[in-house]
Image 1: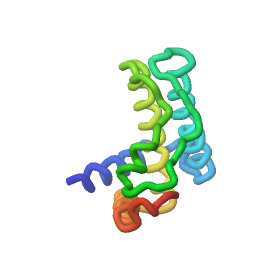
Image 2: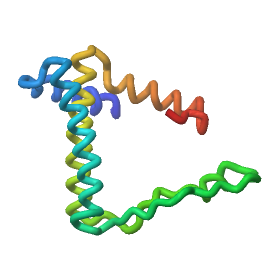
Image 3: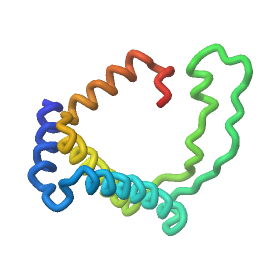
Length: 132
């Protein structure tokens, strides 16, 4: 069922994308979309203030006995919770990013669901060593 939703989304993108059909156009729109996601997150900090960033060097002890202990040392540096408005804006920008990702898959004749499955299998197989 999930592959049908992904395929349907990719097909819809293919039907809608007329103006930016060149691979050059799609690549530039994909890049622009990624920047807009970054900008939306940044605006939630600088304009709205619903979240803040408190970044500092992450100290990792020399003697860790488990991955769980390592995870306990990690920090996203994000403080607070995005408000409903900022969440909607970020989700909208992420949607556009997915749209142009699907568009690039269409131009390159790649099935988006296959990309998800391949990355999922790689992540499962490599586990914590999958740091790309």
